[in-house]
Length: 316
Picture 1 (cartoon, rainbow, N blue to C red):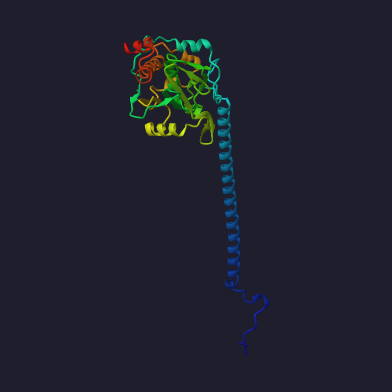
Picture 2 (picture 1 turned 30 degrees about the vertical axis):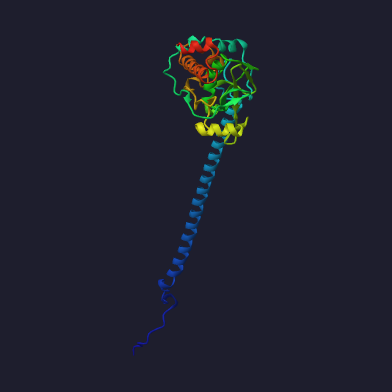
C-alpha cells in the first residue's frame, strides 16, 4: 500500500524568505544615503558661495583702498596740475598767497587804458548792473565791497580784472599774493586780496574772502566772516553767490564777467603774460572786463576822477 502522506520538507527544501520582507529595509537605507549625499552637496555649494562673497568683499575693499590712496596723493601734491617750473602747485595755498614778482605786478598795473578799452567784448558774459540800494560808504568815502572765496574759480577769474582796474585808482599794501582756486573747483591761478590794505583818495575798497581753498569736510575752511550788514546786502542782491561786487550801493556785479575755463591748470605767470595782449582769449577777456570795471568805478564811485583814467575809458 502506498503511503500518500506528505513528507516534511528537507532542510534544503524549506521555502526561502520572501523578498517583500527585505525591500523596505534596503529602501530606507538608500534614502538615508541619498539624504547624506544631498546634505554634503548643499554644504559644498554654501561653502563655495561663502568663498565667492568673501572674494567679492575683498576686491571691493581693495578698490576702495586704491581710490583712497589716489585721492590722498592728489590732495597732497602727487598729481601736479602742471609740469615744469612756475606750475600751480597741487596743494592748498596759504590764505595770503605767495609773493608775486614785482615785475609781474608792474606789468599788470601798467596796461594802458586804451589797450583795455580796445579789447574785444565777445567773451564777456556778465556786466555790472544798476541797483537801487542805500548808499554804501566806509571811512567817509564811497565803498566798493568785494565778497569772494579762495576756493571759487569764478572769483579767481574775476580778481584779475579787479586788480588791474583797482590799480588805476589806488595802491595795495602789502601787494596781493598768488593763490589758486581749489583743485576740485578748476584749479585757476589768481591773486588774493586777503591780508592787504587798499589806499585810494577816491573810495574805500573792502575785500572779504569767506573761505580758503583748503577742503574741510563737505566744504572749505572758513577765512573771513561778513558783517551782518554785508551779509544782508550780499544775500538780497545776488542770493549769496560768489563773487559779488557792490559799487557804492549804485551798481552791482553778481557773478564773474567772463569764463574761467581757459585759465584752468595754467601757471600764474602764463596768465599774467597774456594780460594786455588782446589777440589771445585770456588776454582779451581780462582786458575787456577791466575796462568795464574802470568805467563803472568812474561813474559810481569817483565822479570821473582821475580824469586821465576816466576820460580814456569813456572815449574808447
